[in-house]
Length: 159
View 1 (cartoon, rainbow, N blue to C red):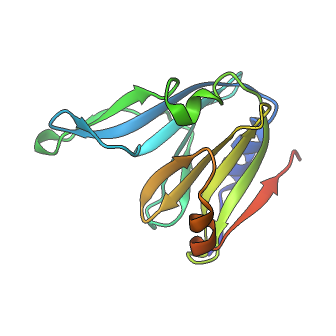
View 2 (view 1 turned 135 degrees about the vertical axis):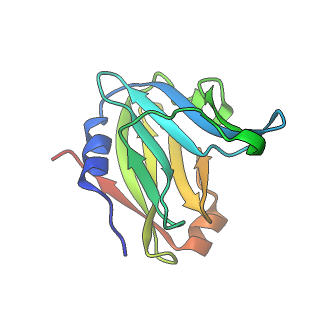
View 3 (view 1 turned 90 degrees about the vertical axis):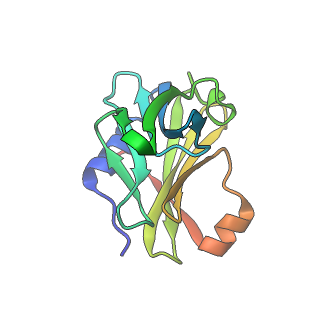
């Protein structure tokens, strides 16, 4: 069932027109090896509360939280550690840029809101998508994924 919380939509829309100042990723680390994909990403926009994106418990949807990521010791299974994403190739062109539009990414295969796509003033995108209970971040979602997942983009607008 395709649903997204009003709090999530409200936060996304309230960030339009604001600059992305910081992005922090929560990564699983085991024996000094950092996983390539983040468990969650916290985004900080000028004058706005934090928004954290992660995979929802259903394994197909994107989830939102107003709490920033936090580290966790997993004992013999490693740890979840926070890393700045400001220098990351995917994020670097969006940091400091104004958010101009937001689209929900709907999956017709999963019948869910699988992600969110953010467009910035410099025409760069950051797209967050839950694929198989893993969070992926793209500048542009590959065409093969768009086709195979039956992805559709629904733009959110200011109320």
